[in-house]
Length: 237
Image (cartoon, rainbow, N blue to C red; front, side, top):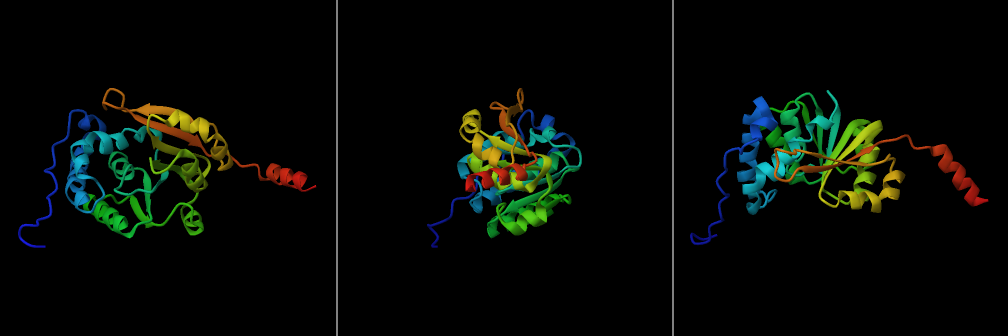
């Protein structure tokens, strides 16, 4: 690279908006630090697009953190496809009682997540490289109280990946967009086949966020293997 071909620098981070203190409370300083890491190094690593920097607080950090009341006290949580650390790291900031596993398949992102959790001192967070559908991952990290993910796939795929990691009676918390209700109707059969109960759509951040966070909640139910086996036997006759 010559002197005239300089790489564009990341935009200058901005301070927290109105409402951020309401969401993050006494741990706002950690949220500011995470925001600044995303706005600088996160952009340099390609984890966040430069155009997203001005929207980091509203669309990413606060959007993730406002769902924190959906998680039981002291819950064991797996964040599938954590990527830049969303929603897992904002959740860990707001809820240090949660035992969070950030599950991410890409080595570069795993390195980023490890660096960020160390920098922020998030001792309740573990970073794991792997995919939710891998047998070894399900064996090591299954039985979670809550599995969460942020718009990484359609609901059918998300249920197939995430619900096997949740214990019976546990919950899938999927951050979705405006099409959440359509996805529930379209993917109902696949969600049930993956061990999901009746999904519910809720919103969080009303009155704080310009666009509240839409969440699909899917309970993990007991799969009646005996009934499935009986059906297969009847089919084979």
